[in-house]
Image 1 (cartoon, rainbow, N blue to C red):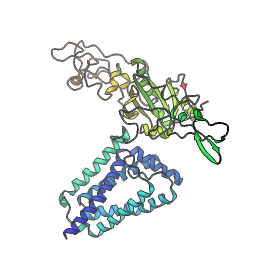
Image 2 (cartoon, rainbow, N blue to C red):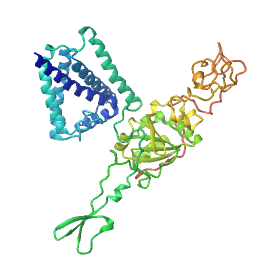
Image 3 (tube, rainbow, N blue to C red):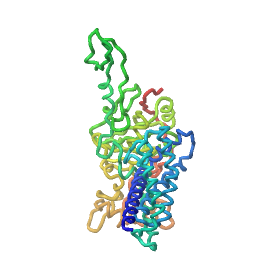
Image 4 (cartoon, rainbow, N blue to C red):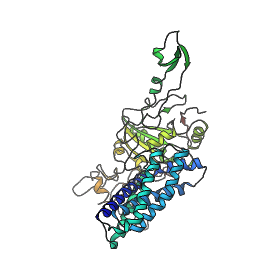
Length: 462
């Protein structure tokens, strides 16, 4: 009996840990999981709505994590093992098909956290299936860590955690980044190494050898071929950024100071939702001396079509879409760099609506806290014993929010008064906040950008 208990716990921990890691890796990077699922669907010729793919990916990650926790702690013994067995009934034949047909480079079982070969994936599932079969027979004979009365708490916590990870990873960026372009690393290095790797094959007396351009042999050798140099544009080999003439300008567009890079891996009509907000961000960058550049995963006709839709005022370059998906997650994202080093990455939807209204470039260091940390209140209110304008924003955002609106910069209204027309709860004699710029609404992210001349730089563009 003691040996049986040990074997059951070993099987529980092995199966549970595998499911936990697999579910956690998928939940923390939902965009990566979605990309992998879309690869499978493309191979099979299936057209599934994006919403359904998203819901399925989030649900599968949460169920995997929950199942792993329940098995590892010995809770809900029959149900947890039955769910794991049902998963393996699908995954075992699927990974066998992947091993034989090789439709994708890797199965994506552990996301970017751990990439294993299709052969290793199949063998892993064979071992897991054997352990699960053993647990189907013996799991109920050994007690778990928690009594039945509180196992529902384990279920709730184990579901809430992966759902939170998925929400954060989808809305902002993955909380843990396993990709090459992490915070604190260089945004890209270009592909200048491609020229250095170019070589030529010559033959003499039936023997072929490689020579670089500077080491070509004498006339006794016969030229055979000049293979194209292999480059890596997506997984740590540097991202090549092209101008309109097809030259790699990745190193040239990096500046010493602060820069904002708008990254759009697959530009389409969805970008128009954020077009006006991006235009305001560009104006903010111009006012504060911050560089602003857009990099798109489109070329030629697609690039020109995007330009006709959006009419950008800023410079636009192109890059490989797969490489850009390694740099950021999401349909549109912003990367903030200082001297070419990544400080933060975020999707456009997660940025504060009033970020473009900032007056200082230092706001970019803490984009979420600009109205709460340090500096005077926008409406010049003051605290006890302080002169107007010296009230700290942290206090302004809580103590005197009823005095002035630090976010929309308008007066609050009093009873029966139109918005911004009267003092309302403002202190007597308090001057109003700065006027809004003509034609601009501080929260208008969703409107289209006004028509303006655009400066497009793409590879093969028209």
